Length: 268
Image 1 (cartoon, helix red, strand yellow):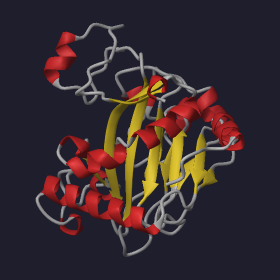
Image 2 (spheres, helix red, strand yellow; image 1 turned 180 degrees about the vertical axis):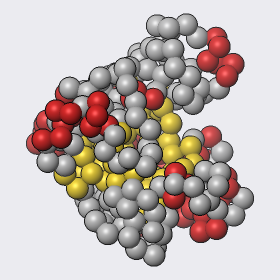
Image 3 (cartoon, helix red, strand yellow; image 1 turned 90 degrees about the vertical axis):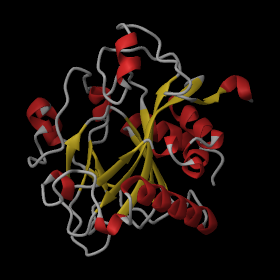
């Protein structure tokens, strides 16, 4: 695992809203990630992902966008050890310049063979906190190519995005541009990358993924983070019902079980 980011990489992230680091994991580390995530997904879904979806009707449009397994770290200690690694937490915190960083949720995202495109969307408007420094990492467990649905970004969109909107990941790939017509003139950037790469993106940077035109799965493991000190905005999202009902708008989201602290500068 790469243990340090350069000033140029950090500057690029802030300018464009995303950062791709190829070769982030070596072959041994990549194989560990693959085995742990595959096992956790199979355990969650009750069998091999090749035969299952968690999106209801397996022939519905959204079920063919990706199979999504949220918060695998809650049910699999090996995945928890990988995605909550404080070294990853530190690098992520370094990118956004936060003193501390907490997990929002991890998720496996597996685009099936001949899978549908992932529509352009923002992350933060779905979540239970508002922050211009929310961030996710996306680990390529397989080569991500133009052919199998690699990630795409609208560079710089995080600078003008708003918190008070969200667009579903539906049939209309470009619906987001009805809310942000000014982004139509920005050239989207594809980020094909080999397995073992990591992609960080700001939670307000517009992103999507192409269709998988191949007959193979395209696997990725992700984790979303919020800066330590973030506050509740009234949206439930993935919060457990009892925790959601206990919160008032403006309350600190500091529950260590729900949102564990994975890095703080005081730990150095």
